Image 1 (cartoon, rainbow, N blue to C red):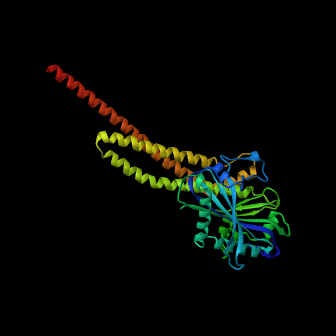
Image 2: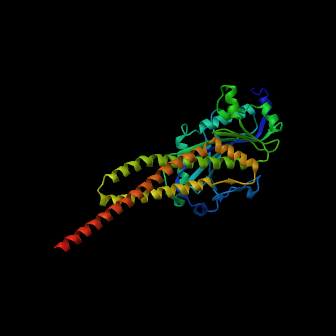
Image 3: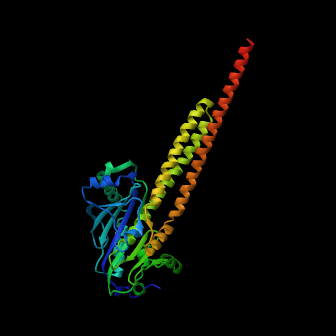
Length: 371
């Protein structure tokens, strides 16, 4: 049932964070970025959890860009802080945060949806392209094999830090309806759709709350913790990279089949050279993608904090990260098998050539003896 007393709840301190994640390079030299930014960077730190509760493969780096003004509906223009998080495996996350404070719950939801609509890539393509270009210009020397950012992920995080009245999470949920915020829909949803949206709900203390969906999250954090938001951002970065390598392998497989068929159609002496070159190229591709996917997998390990571990596992499941990982592994297995088949065919061709050479030498010796 939709809450009927939402107007009695006022959001005193809240914010909306819009995330846009892009793959910009094969890798990013994090240490080099620190030098380029001349002290304007920071390393993300856990607020609630102990440092040993989460381990990073290589710690991400955060830097601040100039604040921007967002086009908004209803309330007019809104300002937003811009922060960027850089990951060593080539992903960047542009994070725009705008304050939404001293509003009734209905007004808070309406303002959040206005900001979300105004910052959709389809609604403001020059805006995001401009932000990404600013970032590329700043960190260009630190990009390892830059790539075109034609793949992106987006995520929305609505944060509530204080309300009036201040209530435990369960009592708050009885007074507000989070479904319009989580779905982006103002038309009432069916009971089944509502239940699905609210399925991934977590609390650690009595007054905090995290509700996760595929592309949005509502976080009630009276202590101002950012740990949950950080975990969700890393999960989105992992999803982005696996999608990127899945598309890369999708493009590579047809080319690989065509090249293999062309090699098999060449004469034996030339085929040996082509087999060797193609096998080396496939081996290099497999090695690079395997290395990058392992770095993505190891980007974050939640070890001792049970609450964050549950949220991270739920996010990985929601984003279908394991499914994307399995798809990449299957395509890598196909390429490995092709590489092995090429290697075996090259070895067999060399053996046949050697046998033919030996037979010719024997015949030559017999002819010489007869003469």
